[in-house]
Length: 287
Image 1 (cartoon, rainbow, N blue to C red):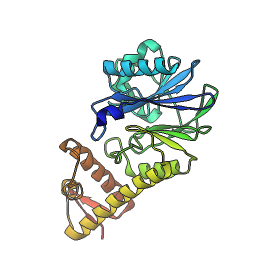
Image 2: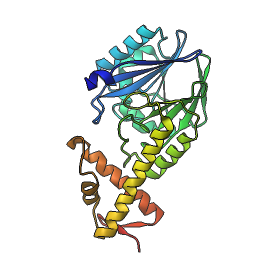
Image 3: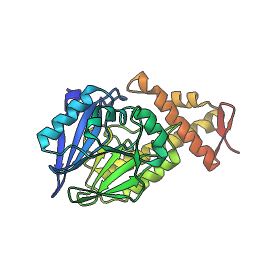
Image 4: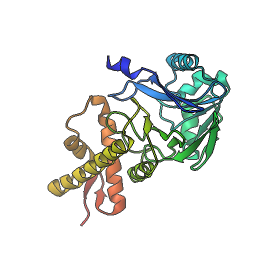
């Protein structure tokens, strides 16, 4: 039942624009079973945000959504980031002849993810696109990855957030792509937008955007405080030690590695801020 509900297509109508959340089956991390693609447009023109995994189901789900909602074939695909459940699906869609966009910071990772497709164009913070008579603002929103892109539609007060926000739980943030300092800065920035809804990278529409962003911020600060407290208590710990102490209840063993990397991202932030130091593989509070 959970999988079926998560795959239900949802449509938001504006005056000139439809925003269609298309859950695309992907081998992503629990508790999610799909990655959201977003069709934004009308019968005359549209764009796609994120293309899912490289498998035939990607094309099937998107074709069904286009047909059911009377949406034009997308002329552009905007990749929020290069991870394998968001980008490689463009290989299934190249007969659309789309322009593929990413952020400059994500260029090499994106080209690697979508190979043999070998051409991408770039969007930068503050760029503006127009689709179906509506303005779409581009936000460079690093944290989950260095080149993470978000889209904001001011007339509808909707943010398409990629993996900066997920519907259940929180995104993992960690090396080699993620940066916890950048991520928290991004969350504070996103919270300043005027929003009615957030379209997350995974899961259903988020109807209480400010409460949800604040929940994510507080979760990250809680983890940081836990790390500091544990280092005070035990003096010297590895990132594995800390992960085992903090994440005692995980939804599945498959998410342990991203939990460990998230712990490392917090440690890197604390080292940068001068409160923690590292000796070989051991972390300790700085005197």
